[in-house]
Length: 117
Length: 111
Image 1 (tube, helix red, strand yellow):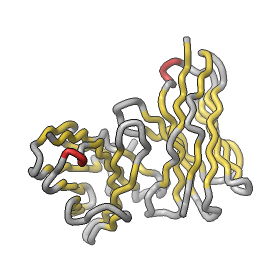
Image 2: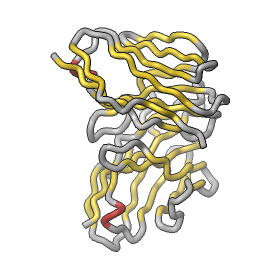
Image 3: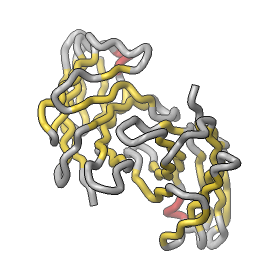
């Protein structure tokens, strides 16, 4: 099966600092990766679509200068939360799309729980 | 606005019963349909995908798709307490685009 990893799984940081989250597809190449955020007892909210070698596409209301996304290779995408504030505390989950059939499946990483003090 | 609707529940069933989860979607052009299971504090896990009208069975799970009615369902036979989780219905309009998720239905299976 397709495996997506995320690192770190949990991070606690002080307000004003930046945090980088890595998302890797371990056994397949992913031209497209997606970043989601989930607040407690709510559904997943798509933040941005990341395509290898090009700029990410952000959803309405998501600040691209605050949530920096880099998709440098077919197996790695990073999300950097810049100048983090307590309201950025959330569960961040990436997912990767499979190149090979079935093309439409998305597999999720285990998530990163961010707590900003 | 593309939407995916699910009853939030909770849906409570006794162990061994059939759990029926339902989902409707608004974009008639949607091509792919998925059911994910999410345990509390964990990320979603893909359990079923379905692309054409009819039923698709995988073990205790059966996904049903009716594109004319824009309706997707998931049946869980012989429900187990370990099936207690939130089930997310997701729809993809076309390859390469992001999944659109419903808000999820919480299933509780009592022993």
